[in-house]
Image 1 (cartoon, rainbow, N blue to C red):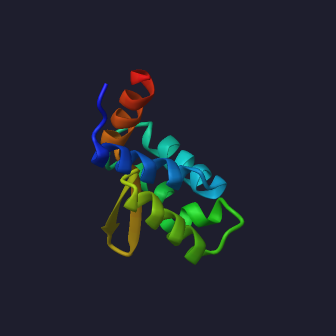
Image 2: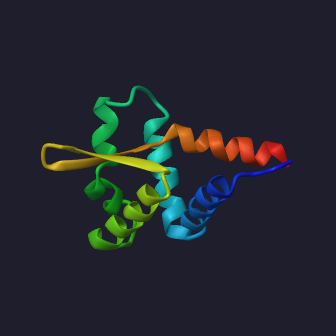
Length: 104
């Protein structure tokens, strides 16, 4: 079996981003918030940077940094909605992770 170098590089970014306990917890929170319905629901405000920071004993700037790492790894998408930035899971990356785990 041959695995593309670019794919393994992308997966390495994903696993590195999730290796930090705070980032993993933040990612899990975003995933749970997105699991209920459409991409843009009334529940979206739960996934704003400010609301996420309130759930953790971390500063807003630290949460922003963690979200940036998750976004860089392709795990989440961030979108400005007025004064808020909402975060949602990128389902394409989840498919890639599942494909990787099942291929072994």
